[in-house]
Image (cartoon, rainbow, N blue to C red):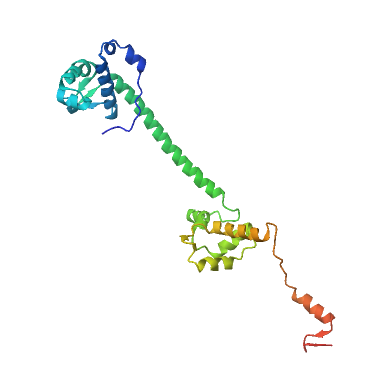
Length: 243
């Protein structure tokens, strides 16, 4: 099975200083490098069937049978060792095992780091809960709280709570009725974030009225105060007539 390590380090100084390598013809040197690359991609060793004879070698390297015979004699038999069903190169095997070991350590460290990050994110989610929430709140409830902006349609209490802090002028009932009548769609697309729609309503409101505009609120007159005012005017509450 081909390995997953796609980068092959090449010890150039050691390669070029070798007397055996220096004695190679240019095409033989190219064949040697190519065989090393194939060995690397095959997991550090070449299957014997790929190099069993001149015909197999010529097919692998794209050369003539005559040249393949020469490559077998001057390259394969000199730089590779036949071991069972494979041909191996001692230097390449050493480098491959080193790289494979580093790769496995990085993969293991990445998995551990990923688990730690997931754990940290979960702890952060728990810390972000409002202080007045029960400490026994389940994880599913926490996730619902975080993801409620994507729950369509929302509960009206969620809209009121969100508007209270972000857009006090919003009429939650009007908001719910407006989008409910439209199947909770924005033109032709389905709504995916109702809080974003509240923000859009806020921007439209500010364009029309200005950012600092607040509607006048008339507070109700307490019943006791209204009775006193009528009494001072001489109004008889029992008969409904002025005294």
